[in-house]
Amino acid sequence: MEILDVTRENFEEEVLKADRKVLVDFYADWCGPCKMLAPIVEEVASEHEDLKVVRINIDNEESIAMDYQIMSIPTLVLIKDGKEVDRVIGYVQKKVIETMIER
Image 1 (cartoon, rainbow, N blue to C red):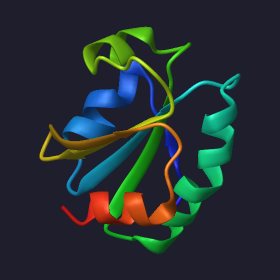
Image 2 (image 1 turned 90 degrees about the vertical axis):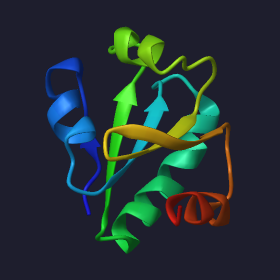
Image 3 (image 1 turned 90 degrees about the horizontal axis):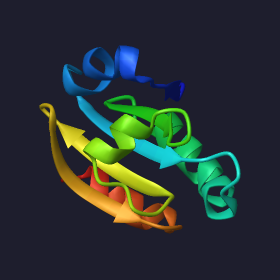
Image 4 (image 1 turned 135 degrees about the vertical axis):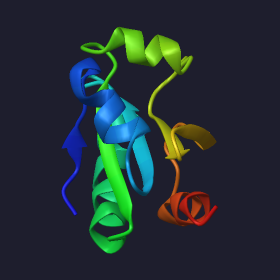
């Protein structure tokens, strides 16, 4: 499944009103660990049809990052039924993300 870039304009529709779990990748273009994590997130997205994966550039969407109190990146947030159910901060292995999305 393709990873969707989300902005303030489509955040509510794509994330909060989604009909399945959503993995939100908060990142920035200048962030080295974010670049290292990106292929893992892409792999997870391609392997889980029941999961929607989106990414949010914190430099472009500061208000969303503030709403979710993103203090460091990368941060992955799992949203289910419009609510945050889990979060991991920093570069993590694929198995950590797999365990997270099984919640």
